[in-house]
Image 1 (tube, rainbow, N blue to C red):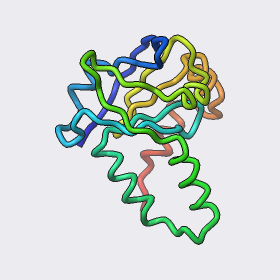
Image 2 (image 1 turned 120 degrees about the vertical axis):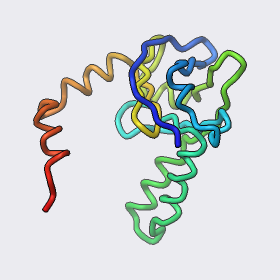
Image 3 (image 1 turned 90 degrees about the horizontal axis):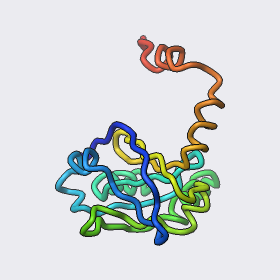
Image 4 (image 1 turned 45 degrees about the vertical axis):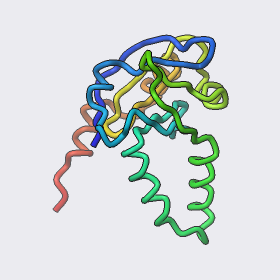
Amino acid sequence: MSSFKGSFTYTVDSKGRINIPAKMRKNLSPEANNSFVITRGFESCIFVYPQDEWMKRENEIGKLQQTDPQHRYFTRMLLQFAADAELDGQSRIILPKELLQYAKIENDVFILGAFDRIEVWNPDEYKKYLESQQEDYLTVASKVFEKKE
């Protein structure tokens, strides 16, 4: 199982390539085989799933009811921009142009470890996301970890 944490600021090159930070590559499971699936995130970001974690998502998608309009919509939005990627010799992956546009990424990228995936953000968009939160971190943490009886 791949597991990612931490954050890093890098740049995207003219070909749409970003480096995957060494600390994150170290936590890439052997089952991922240096392969990723890149797709649209839930906010204005890009999700980068290692292949092993993506297979878990595909399994979940396969269980959705394709007769349900919301399930079909979600499947379409997630898979419409999905692309395979492999680390090159310099530990980079290519981000598709459509996803760079979706995430408003031009030069700098904020790379965030989000447990089973890596998120790639425009640093300004990530700042806006944080500023838009209605509750502070402590309040949200209290609710997330609240004991359910």
